[in-house]
Length: 342
Image (tube, rainbow, N blue to C red):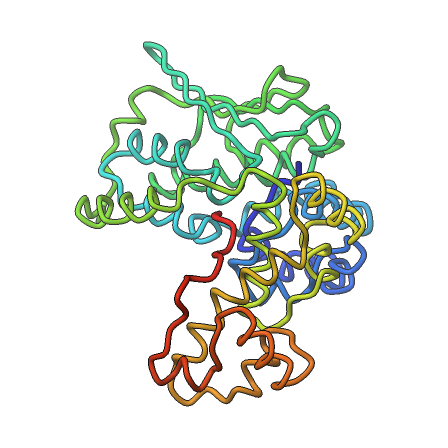
């Protein structure tokens, strides 16, 4: 199963890559990731592609701490809606609980377990496919980002009690001690951050409980992330169509696979790429033709039709009326099939 993550995780990648002498877009191409996602932070991309990019960047630059450098510049902004709901909680403990509950919406291959004892709280991070898929750099950037988020709730004077990392120690252990500000244990059983129980009671300045409640309701409405291969293809198709650049090659690029893999996996699910594309086109075309001032030629181009006439034939076959009739209020007797639920 291909896990997806929002490209907001790469918000600071160009800056970090250039700081160690790399061309960020060239590295994106080497990792077989769409460079355009650097300009669109909500783009779904394959976790495997992100991991490959981090490892290639560390190897090409010789920066063993590349993942930490990326985490160092990140924060709540990298987690989109999830980051917003964390920031508005009343206490650090409530913020960490919200983060662990909703992190899968941003990264569906990541899980946080929070275990409390009398004196300590241990936040254990699990990355699906860690053996062997999750690399040193992906572990560092993920756990480093969790650390930065907790630190942002306290202020920069806060330090955890301990940090545990599953991977072997680097050549420069000092860099890790400086980043986390505490004892770092390598070759540990888990990847985890240990903090004091008292830390959980710390109130967050400027938090707004009403905003937190509103965001929670909004995020709960989208809490279920795509689980099947069909749903993941559907999500990427929907995103790319909205940007006017949806082909099976582009979808394969976002999912870090080949077009043949997409055809094979979808056939096994009893559907096809053309069926998913057709359903998503049907959903989007109604919004576009009802929008005032949109030229049909532009809509046809955005939806990937070879010409306006091709879209017109497709529309009549799909909806049982012409676009002109639809705009005048004519509606088909039966509603068209809708896209796969995501």
